[in-house]
Image 1 (cartoon, one colour):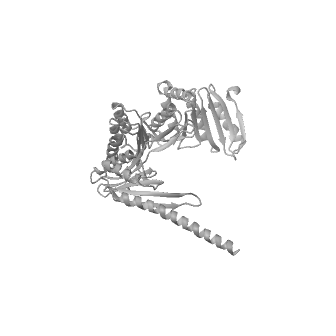
Image 2 (cartoon, rainbow, N blue to C red; image 1 turned 120 degrees about the horizontal axis):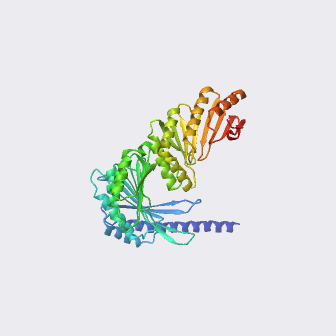
Image 3 (cartoon, one colour; image 1 turned 60 degrees about the horizontal axis):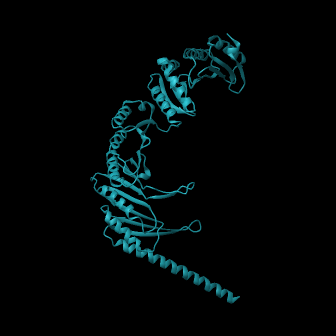
Length: 466
């Protein structure tokens, strides 16, 4: 038993020695890398760190190299060559440069191993050179991600995602000047993936300012695009993007601004430069491009009507317009009735082409008990006006009505009146008779009476006659 205990102790001691020796050997290799890299003129400092994530994960070695903002392409290649002579393997090597004047912080992340791609680090040096040439008032925080290898598991094809540049500056002028210069520096041989923002704190981590995204293939001519982009950036927007297949897309804050003169000027400038341009409301759902474009146009035009108090997008391809009064509903209907109802016909056509519905929901701030839903068209605007007038009259006659909902289709009209649960049957019957006497029955398909607790009585107006 004593012999076994002695063997166990000896084994543990041997194991500890092997681990310590391995750790010493590993540390020696990384320390040697640190000394060798630190000797280069362009290197300000070089450090390495190790995190042991056992038992939830493996070990992670990270190298951090701070280099001068003035590092040249040749010096970047020299740095890679110096690293290649070592046996140490990093999970990631981070290169960074900082400068007080101009106030710049820039990082290169995503490089693995030690012996990286010379040309990739040379591209990073070109970005550093662009930043080094900025004026003393320039402030920016820049993050450059490395090439990323990806495999399409369906086809087995391997591709390499281009490095991406993330930048934040304190002014739009600085942002676009840097973007244009960075594109000229690295965009000839590489696809250009740029995301920028303008914010006072100069930190992409807390980026609350206006944003722009540019994504173009290698050797793409952005010269005619940048002036239009910089002009559009001055609009009140939630974000701007540019890609060859979509052109410039601007997300505007509100419907009134979307229909305003500033957007029109930006669109004209883009047209003059032969740059595709579109503007949409921010944070809105999308169907097909044709349906979306029509919905945007309808919403922006409705917002400009004097009687419309608010407009927004609802669920299921719905445009919601709230008018200041019941009379405002008539003004909106007149808007749709202009030019022989061409606007409603356009809505019908787009709904069919988009295999969906474009629905306009009209409400009033004066009496929110009345809602009108135009489902892809109206059979008769005259009949609809008469139904709205009838609804207004019965709402005035009794306070027991919770909601009058008018639903309009291309070929029929439906009316549903919902009473409070406490409403007497006699009130419901009297309202029904009054409504029947007011309604034009040529296009009325169904009139439904019911209570808010689910009880209901139905009258088919066409079958009953007048």
